[in-house]
Image 1 (cartoon, rainbow, N blue to C red):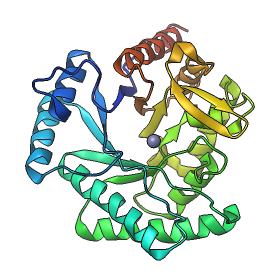
Image 2 (image 1 turned 60 degrees about the vertical axis):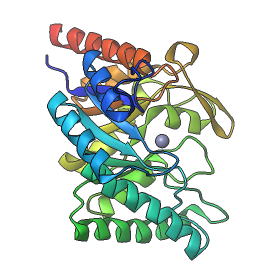
Image 3 (image 1 turned 45 degrees about the vertical axis):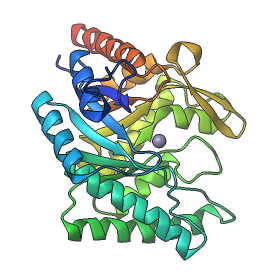
Length: 287
Ligand SMILES: [Zn+2]
């Protein structure tokens, strides 16, 4: 059975040589490793010239590597002042514009925090603001999907249900499902079984239909957590996340898309994931 998922890293692989370095070097290194996708980690700021974007796009096209962008961390759909929201919004717009120029099809971002608000109030503001950003990008001809990420702490906007609701409401928006974050967010070790992963996938399928289901965008790593959620990302082998059960659920659900590794071991764990996924795929096709 052919792969339904592309595997890759968030940020260029650790083993990217110095020449050519940067994103083009990362693309070529992933290709050598037989990984198929890169999420460019523009997590501090977006500082990439039009010329660099063109080089990235040409390199990725020639290497047949799928690109996405992780937008800067400092974005909050529920920012409490107009000024703070505008600063975050401009970072998201900049990531989307430059990412699209560089050939990225998806723009991933952290949706922000509840702050002092009840979840319902925070969600109302988040939907209004995200609708405006999506409309503006559409007007500008920036044809990329905005992907709010499911977050790992209970104080943060971004449950799976919230990201599905926003995606139902706003054209051009779909979730980035970080399964490590969802496991950490629960805080009690739950969300770590075939049943729970399958139920989450069913929520996505029922909520978003074909549009959301055909191209899942998944983040994965090991994770350390406490009662309030995420502490830090870990290598797969140092953590308790049952990623093989997740792959079993993904294979059984006939899901497809991209899986981006966020473990500190980057490409090493991306290859571990790809291998584990293929083992389930093979097992399934032999049944
Ligand atoms: Zn993220």
